[in-house]
Length: 302
Image 1: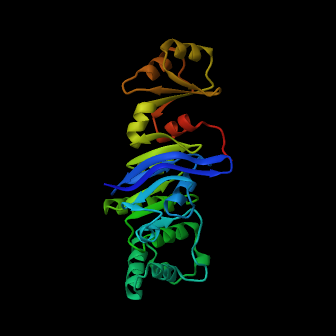
Image 2: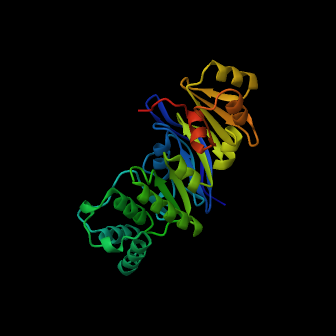
Image 3: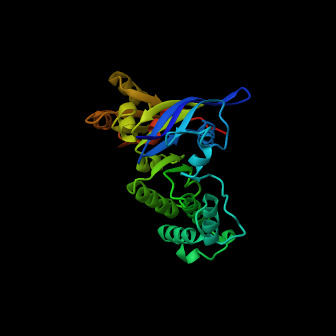
């Protein structure tokens, strides 16, 4: 059932191993996430998957086709929404869709029907005759996603599709991606928004320095690696530190802040706030962001 198989994929730029032996598979009908900090190798991996960047080693198969022998056939069956805006500024919204469809040898009448269908799906009908130059960032991202679907692909590749969008535009795109998933479309997604990954992805991998750190279902990974909830303690004093040390619990000490990872039913929060200190103690559900930061670290990446 795997629509995409990646085996020991590698890409070097001089001495830098951008992708260093990545392997995973994407099943038909699922949304698969590829997460990681800046420079982790996500975009390089994505670009190798659709033949834009040549790989140094590894095996890539899409739809049981070899990417070296069957790249043309593979490209006809994938849709790509890249990070960069690549819309034609000299064309209208509708013309961008119709014109792009011609790259797939779609007949003009069929391309026009498909364009109208996608304009309706992404609520762009009233902007069909507008020039690209006057569109907001959110409208451009919706059009980019619509264009990636113009050939009715079997695999949709999304490289950070909602970066820079306002909350309303992001929510709309999430809803549309959920609808596409419900229709059975297979999606490969890279994103820096952990909420986006938790909401959309059936499975995911977290990569860093070209390696896969972990793979699985988001909620299951959070429960396994972090727990049920996180206790945040700001400005911890000696009494708090002594209490936690005696409890022998899972602690991440950040200096001015301590994170304590708790399992379901753990009453440590109640005992701490009753016996030691209540101020500055917050209990919240564990999230994918907690797992991401635990695995990849908290230092800034340039």
